[in-house]
Length: 624
Ligand code: CUK
Ligand code: CUA
Ligand code: CA
Image 1 (cartoon, protein in one colour):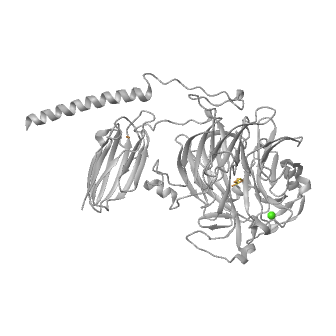
Image 2 (cartoon, protein in one colour; image 1 turned 30 degrees about the vertical axis):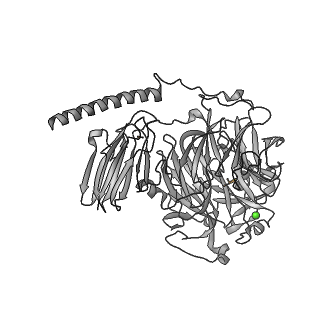
Image 3 (cartoon, protein in one colour; image 1 turned 90 degrees about the vertical axis):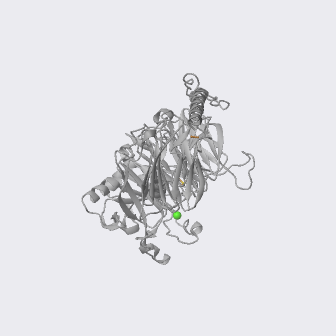
């Protein structure tokens, strides 16, 4: 017996040596004998239409695109248009385990999808600062926040009174985010209250909502207040900047208050409105406790009772989008059904407000500014203008949905200088830094809603097309394009060096009270039918690797990946239990389930982490 044990321990020792050697070999294979050559960023200024980012070279920009119905954000390297990462925000993701762990499941709040349209990045002094990315969920009235150190979703904020959260904009100091409802609803329309008003009471009982979200210095979102607005349909909001700082502009297309045959009935008026709100005054009112009521726990402002907070400006028929130029002076609105963009001068808007130069009153007696007094230019840009972006050289770019083109025009002269066709039916366009005070210019991505004869046929469901256009020279050049099987609405493009991504979570500094810092801290704690496991994952094993529980036990596993080497992610899946998570180096994740199925269930690593990755497994045995 003794002899056998000795032989066995010898075998174990030999296996260990072999494993260690293998680890070394694998390490060399993965990491190279020395440091891998540091890749160099491509030099985009020298790009021509035939240039690409060569293998081994890094892109010079990041593009963060909203995933539309996929409820995620996805990340391209620009100019290669290579997909680098998909970040789940409103949708569970089996690859990472997002939405599978109890904390992320709670964050998703029972929803399994979102419809995100407008990503915005945090700014410092009007410049993108790479800390956080925010994105709206039009379907379920939420805003999600991604931490750009880890590229993980860190918060989802619900907007109780808002329906169809479509627009999202951030102030140049990142103190506030504003969202606006695309649809209107009766108050107390939250799921818990179930308040109801018939659609024929639309004009009196339904309201649009403008929400103000405060942003802490740690990036935590807090719902400050919500403002009632006319029951129009609000498509986009843009925070003022520089001279217009302190104001927010919101375009609306349904001043007709149509609730049926909207396609026809919301296009009857020759003009709709841009709503102009003084959010600094609104915030002061709330800070002084002078909000009007509380609905679903939110401080509500009724601007009809507080002159000076909100104004209406007539704009083109059924606008789609309002944008503010980098210097804050020009407020640009496009009417989908007018071939023009209208440029308003914020200085004139301010003067008209001060002089009380109004052409009349609108919803709730809100003053309506005189169109001709605040308008500076109407530019014939082409058919179906939607969104406008700005570059670093004093040009603006407007997408033309109907015409399938992008128009370039000049601020100040208001002259159209060039047009480039796209393939096709472009929605948003995004210029690097194009909605900040300091655009980088250089690249524009046209987010085309459709594609025609651009990609191999994949059945009746076509991909959309994202086209990269070089705008650094005197004429626009189409560089390349990429298909997507989701609908990006908008994108944020920033130079690579703005993003300071971390590559490991430092072990022992995660702040997670259930993290362990060494393998010998791994343990199983039983308390009645509660089984708590503090588990370690490190190449190429789990500790413990045998878990025996009784049927009906509630199992919680705090799984820490003890690796500190970049790129060594371990997965953890349990056969038949519908469980998978990925745990990045130094990260701790929690897996929770009731062991309701008796039997033997292997658990195994789902990320190919080493040559002995398959051997990284264990057994969950559930005693009947
Ligand atoms: S919207 Cu999609 S193309 Cu949601 Cu900004 Cu205009
Ligand atoms: Cu750990 Cu594969
Ligand atoms: Ca209309």
